[in-house]
Length: 215
Ligand code: G3P
Image (cartoon, rainbow, N blue to C red):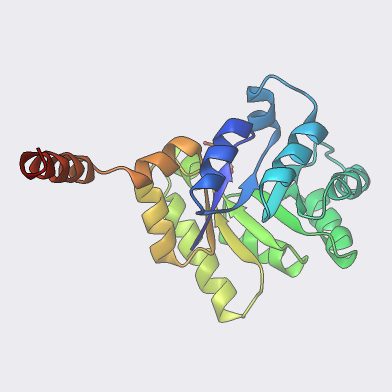
């Protein structure tokens, strides 16, 4: 499973890229607004200069025509921009048009395997089931990821599954076990995945043992 960073924070992206484990970034209007800017274009262009893999930029239009127009503009910002489109009837129509033009589409706000099936049939490059938001309302978000992976595998559909709305490292592990192609994780979750108290204790024990003989 590959890891994308789910943020529009440039410093976090720079730090994560240095670790060599990030192969893409996902953004949305909430994440960009969290950075205190409405200049989506400049944020995405900066991210595309840092990250080689795909960078998802979400459309704000709600009708198919507007999504297509906005998608074309966003896709022109950099070669690695993938247009993020919510799964609605308008979203499917826009996905179908943009994907036929060779523009990568990440279909977002997915909460069921049926939505994911439709997104794949419309030509989506990625589908983003929101695990945490389903868990929040008492449903099993990871079960939706498992169902999507099963359906896609069954019919050899090429759309890649991005486990999104990841809230903690256990989500990431479960997504990997479920066969998700990608998990998009907030920076704090990435750091939680790296850290383990026994690693810290081990390092300090190695160093103190070494100091005893190297005086
Ligand atoms: O990738 C989708 C993500 O940004 C949504 O996460 O935590 O707002 O549900 P969250």
